Length: 494
Image (cartoon, rainbow, N blue to C red; front, side):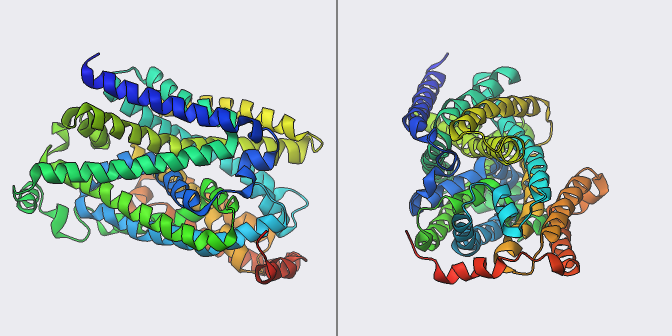
């Protein structure tokens, strides 16, 4: 192993040991109750909430996927930032505050808990539908992100895919299984800081490297459309799809969980602002990195490995000092695991608490549920590993498939449930099913998929289904809805 790989390996080893130490530190507290294991006792402060939410939502899609997209399409990549930064700020600062108050009042720990309590669903139809949708999309989502780890480790260490994906999954399991939500959110906060540093350093490194060489004229000579058009080298429908990405953040349960775990409702707008700043800086860094990388490798075939989604890893290992490169690689790993850990934890809570405890064994003890959750974490990780090895889609698009599917299935339900009193459980159910069916159907129909990102029609049709069916089932409006909404005005901090 040469000096560069030795230094990178040492930095990754230190990073992994630190994450594991955090998991062990929080392990005793995590075992005390499911509320602690899944929400950290609703004690997460505003700064941690802001950065951890950003790191959870962006992941490898930003550090690897968006860098590669900016390399290919140029300025068009920045359009996704405009909406997702805005929608996440709204989600945390407004809709998320309402969800935080509602879930505390009804003593809900998970999303299916909330659906059942909010709509008075005694038949468990919403719980069953939510569990199936969560497991389907979250295993796919985790697999796509582990695929990014496979490619990154495979490139850096020339590993076989099976070894690379097991290494990536092992790092995540070491601290997630032991420490639960609190370990996940604290480590994600640290990972978010590392991602921020990486996405500031890389574009500055490339900028200084080519400063004074006529950067604009060089880019124009390589591909004029990269910067001469607001849509770059992409089509208008592609840009519309990018603008819609932000809507999907309202349906990501790992993001909604951040809202539910916030320590103080009064500080959530502060968190929203911090989250917006983090999103803008990181996304701008990713876009500029991809664009400036064109000055180094004029065409995709020139990139070592031939994959634009590996540009970040290539810059770290080929162009930077080994210590700086090692920190960048740690940033890539941070981006991957900062989302996968929460996806796995959400899937675990869904299977154990929302299915097993709620529908199979209602008398299961808290410690039994936590122990079972850890077993489910391992099993879910194995399934995600299998998907990560078998999936051939690009990271950017396969992550968007799972991201968009969750956004369409749960996004309209979340927003309408916290703002509209007249929504019914049948409206919620129809919206979830419509979002799922249209997302999957559109994605796997090539002509439709080529037309526009599936989230756009799926989100719109799911919203329409929620509203229409709720009007048709007005008699099923929950009896306690007025009392619940009144709590928004009477809520006081504890």
